[in-house]
Image (cartoon, rainbow, N blue to C red; front, side, top):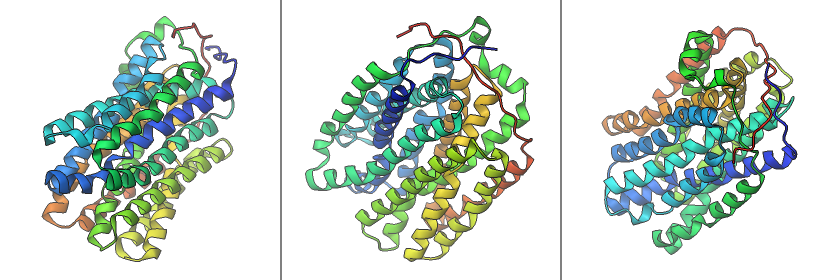
Length: 398
């Protein structure tokens, strides 16, 4: 058994990590509301918009297992304080892209900052948290979700009133959080030699069914959330809703999810986590269907409730996966967050083509299949078991 990592000021470290997640994901939230403006400016189709979303989500999420493995292997904290800065700088220059190719390159590089921060930050949270792993993880995730929800209502007014040329100034908060994380982020850690061996063979040779079920649920949740988070402003615009109110609806959608994740993390330390997963998918599905088939404020309200319920078990999947493999916190978080959101992001390209061939409404309806299958996966999940994950004392690997 590994010893618990000693952190002198765990609360300050946790707050710094949560603040870093808030700042990082606020820049990630810029893309979806900017897509309609970029489409008009650069004259590209919904299918291309889906490809852009896929590129950003691929680099920001699908590559996370690589960064998670490197974080577990190297034990450095550079990914923690550099990640948000990289995300911000490249995202804030999208308005200067002269072509679709350059725009994709900027989104790819911005996503790399996100891919580096999420597993490193999640692993650091696991090290500074003690008995309340679910609550600490939910606080970290909720901060990111709130940042993502505020991104749209911050960037749209700036771009609409001042133009894309002023976006680089919006990277200043990332410089500030770089300094905060440099001071308060927990020190690096030294893994035992046994844990420096490749992680993925160990993970897929032990408890592979349980990991697979958790992974599928993470993918199903992320696919539905990414689809609505990417195309909600466009769908509402097609319904005659002004862009600002579409962005406001997106903010409510993400903010409700943030509140759901925080609530779910709190109760996950007290209730049966498997039952929480079942309730989350069973409860969210009808509210998403109501939104898709009722074009009114009531439909928006249903979407907000569905987001709250669906997001509530986001920290549950991550913590349960981390407890399966003590010492692999970064890798497991990267799989649940990275592969989940990365796969969801890749699906935005075919979803865009479905929207072109049929309607955007039909494309979003297809996401309900994933939620239905996730219900089955949650029912097949073995009963919950807890692992008191502890770590070696840190070596000051700054």
